[in-house]
Image 1 (cartoon, rainbow over the protein chains, first blue to last red):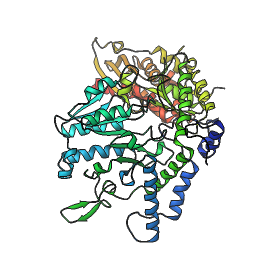
Image 2: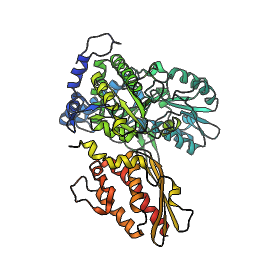
Image 3: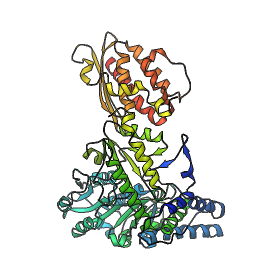
Image 4: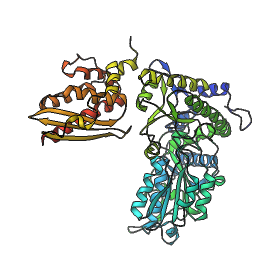
Length: 432
Length: 152
């Protein structure tokens, strides 16, 4: 599947129809209605090439990696490491800067626990610069997914550091003017999301990185909703750590990655320990391998890594710039369509703010669960609830919302079918 | 012929979701004499929550009131419950909770309507949606706990 077009040119309807043929599940019916899948923000669907890559691995190469000298073990190791190179290349990282994890949650916890271990004195002299204690601060934002909030709460509780946050304005945008005072000389870590999983807006990474760098704080970026949807280059962003999940970018579940700047990973203590991450082990002590192996104890997620590489190949062959442009169109169509409906309010800044093809909204007088159930009866899959962002919802005066999220395989017709269905919600529930 | 979604959201349910019988903890009349029991239940999946207060006098419900926020199913369920258990005696209330729980676990199996459940029978369609059973059960679990607490 190659698409010869200008890099920033959105996909065409014809291309999207061809893309859809690569995703068997998109042709299925739900309750007798054609599936309209608008929940890729939670988990995306897999193209045939991803499923085939995993199957081929199990049929032809299955073996433990980085151990054993037999042919299968060598084949498996090569495929596994080639997958690492593929994912590293996607984000502009070196291969040894990419650590496999189960998902972004594990990647974020890996950073937090490694800093925690450094704070407890592990990692020796070299790791001392990662230690936190009373008087230090960790900064997050009020829009974080729980995965980029709770691990930092725990790190603060373990080390005695304080957790602060950059607040949101009434529209849900970061109050950047306050960020400059929240991030100060006591700040050791600034963890924030690239793209909000609820609002869909793209945060000004460069601005926050500049504030963090000015005080020598480490930066941790939650890229779960950016890496799948737009071109992301770690050196361009200038961040220290970045986490993302495979299943949100056409890949299998159970695989994700942590990017860490090489010179930082090199000095960080491990988190999970055991096989495959050691040099010499005695009954008393163990030496550890350099990264990324230091952070990959135990048998790895081999078929999933290979599946994710197939997913990344699918994305790059389509073109990340073109996917970004297509989704921007779908996003504007979603937001403008929802805002034109009576009693429907889109969360966050409206059309005009840079966003991916995702929008969460509130229907006056109808609970999100009921909205989702009604849409499901039309074959439309959306996410309902707090989307793992309770503080953000609380800030906006809500407990739950409904979220529609698109991907490269969604059509404008699907967005229109969704908008048509939403327009019938308040009448059905007697909320008008 | 009703669509699936209409079978789920019976008119009785939509009406109760708006009427909210027993809304407000004061509806329990807990200022009067009797033993008071209260329970707070939260569904962490969707954030729905309910606080339910029951007053028992001589072994029977003399008042029931509730507060909470949630979907039409959870709100209607609390409303139906408040109407149904008023003035019932304690053992009868526990029996109704068990009957309702059984209905929710039926996974849509065609069962004869139980007259004891009254309007609560309208929730039979919910049992076919495992993700929504918790919504319907929220108030009933609160009721069960509140009655046990009042009894202590």
